[in-house]
Length: 427
Ligand code: AMP
Ligand code: GLY
Image (cartoon, rainbow, N blue to C red; front, side, top):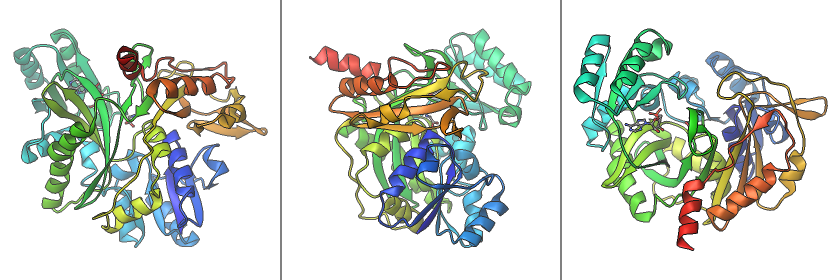
């Protein structure tokens, strides 16, 4: 089977490596890919936003199945256009992808399906939004409705900060994404990410992970795409997983099926685990990055088989198998990220890091140059280790990070700190 993988991040490198393990795979192509993916797939320079070009490539090269990594092509309806051209793909169509594309869409679905989430209001008018915040008080969360690359959310500790965020949204700080604003009560607890896979009717739990969104140690500084993650996570034990499935994931899949817009693909629930149970913060309609770099090294089942079953409506009765050990990943980013950064600096020591036991080195923003590897983005590498505890996985991951010589990059030194502190307290 010839698979075309869309994307260029650490997530897609992890997906590419997992797909390579499938006996069903005969050829793997990635558009546009990166220097790590180039070692396991053919790269093709197609812009995924150009759906006609993707379809033409699939027809010319006999692509049997398209796997879409990032959200933008899903929200733009690439799966619908491929289906219309008779090409099978993994991921949701445009309408159910609105779960990620529109916060207001998700909040309304929560109301319809009785899914626990923060109380909210939605506004397309600045004065009404300001009045709501004045009535509600702080802390309060202000969100641009549309896709804003994770930057459209302000958790405001004061009313003034919330009013400033509202003004920023309506003055066009997030472009069209901010034409409508969602204002939510602030949830209190520990955040976790939960992943499940659906074929539109049936839904299988995959695993939980915990991301580290802030750029600095101790969860300080601005939000990023994610600076590190680990899986599984102690806040989501078996009982909590059952509640997340029963109270949040299954009702979502049923609701979308009832509406005639079934959800096919990976459903990624961003959750707050509050004292009385799980609350939905947001949905993503794809694998997470860097969460995939800890989920897939634990997956023992055939990923291609799983994705095909999802796309073909054959998940019923299927099960998945995960390594019991903990995987922990540390993201290495270019100095300056998430602000402005430069590209093109040389990275050494990747082979030494990769050679260590239980280590995977995933490339994100990298490019090949003069026989070596150079940085080519904000998040550049994700270094994953497997260990018998979070503490052990953390130690091994940083041993590998320390083999990498890249003066223009940095990483957090405390990935997994919550779980490590729990393990220390239990000793
Ligand atoms: P989102 O883009 O919706 O995931 O929001 C980004 C981050 O803002 C989340 O990962 C949370 O840390 C925080 N956040 C969003 N909504 C809430 C909420 N209602 N209560 C507390 N924190 C929130
Ligand atoms: N790590 C968060 C995301 O993939 O959106």
